[in-house]
Length: 354
Ligand SMILES: [Zn+2]
Ligand SMILES: [Zn+2]
Figure 1: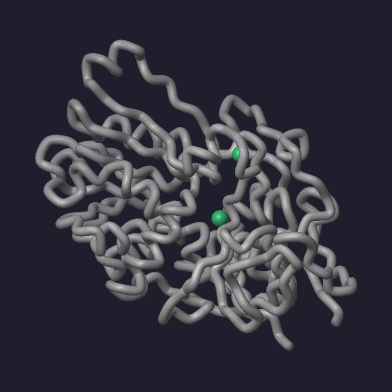
Figure 2 (figure 1 turned 30 degrees about the horizontal axis):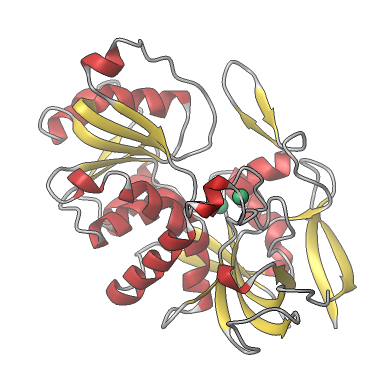
C-alpha cells in the first residue's frame, strides 16, 4: 500500500507531495487511514518555523526541536488499519480521534496527567508526522478516542480547536454560569469557545472581534453580544456589557493589542486566559497584580482527560455550531493559503481521497 503525504521540506516554502510505502506499526504503534484532518491556524506558525514573541523577536521552532521534512496536521480522525504487536485496546476498523498533544508519558508533568505540557513534547503534526497524508502512525492506543455518534469531519477539529477552547473554559469555570464571559477572537478556536461555553452553562458570552463577518459568525455560534475590538471605546463597551468589568476574558488571538484589551477589561479579581499564539507582548505594572488581584494565565491545548470530557460533552449536547467546510487532501496548500489570507470562517477539514 502506498502512502501520500504533504510535507514541509523548507520553512515557509510550498508543501511537497511525498510518496512512500505505508509504514508497518512497531511495538504499541497503530497505523491509521486518515478520514479527516482539520486545518489549524497554528500550522501557519509551524510552517513558517517561528512564533513572534514581541519586540521583533522570534521563537525559532527548528531550534526547539521541530525536524524537517514534517507532515503537519494535528486534528486527525482515522480508521485503524494495522496494529503493532504490543498495541492493545483498539481493533482494525475502529474509527478514532487521535490526541496529538502527547508527551513522553514518563516525566513529572506527564505523570500528573498533563501530557500536553510534557517537557519533551512529541506532538503529532508538530514533532511527529501528522495527518496531511493518507496514513499516519499513532504511537500508542491510549491517545485514540472513540468519537461516538459524531462523524469524522465533525470530530476532527475537537483534537485542537475543540480541546484548546474547552481547556481554557475550564480555567474560568468558577464564574462561567453567573457572569458574562468575554471571548476575544472569533476565528476557528474562538467560535468553538463561544459554542462550548454555552454548552457548559454560560449564560452570556460577549464576543470581541475586529472583523464584522466574524462577529456575525460569533452571534450565530451563540454569543449574546458582539463588540468591535478595533473601536476606540472597546474597553468601555466591554465594561458596560459586563456590568463594570469582566470576571473572565479568554483571548483567542494573543496579540499585544488583544492581551492589553483583555487586561484593561477585567474587574478587580478578574482572570485573563491567553490562548492564541498570534504573537506580541504585554507589560503589566507589577502593582496591578496585587492591587487588581488579577490573574493572567495561559492555556495550551488540553490533556487526555480534557479530550475525553469534551467528546462526552459534545456527544451529549450536540456538535458546536461552527461552520465546517471539507476539501480534498490535495488542496492542503490552498486551504492553508486561505487561512493565512484570513478567508476562512470556521474550520476547514481535509479528506483523503481513495
Ligand atoms: Zn491546532
Ligand atoms: Zn513527559
